[in-house]
Image 1 (cartoon, rainbow, N blue to C red):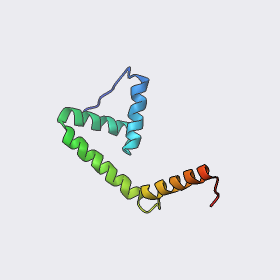
Image 2 (image 1 turned 90 degrees about the vertical axis):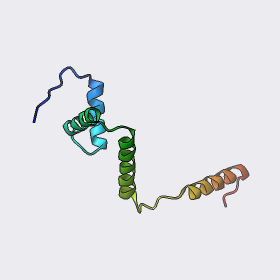
Image 3 (image 1 turned 30 degrees about the vertical axis):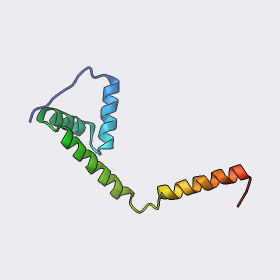
Image 4 (image 1 turned 120 degrees about the horizontal axis):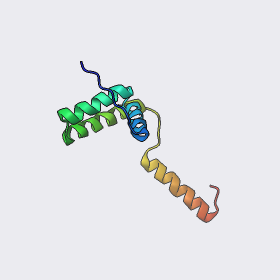
Length: 91
């Protein structure tokens, strides 16, 4: 396997690489390898969509059962708060 050294890399790019790596749960070096692999070996829009779907499924698994309110519940609560503020009612 070859070794690649990148010199004179802009600080902003290096920071974004570290952030992207953290988002994907990889080291910066592993993220760099993945970026090069996907750009040079392919991985067009279909693969990008699949990766996004996989990340979303993983997020849903990690956050399942946290008891978050549904959108309908949040909307009803917001409307009730607004009604109370307009009417001056505490009930």
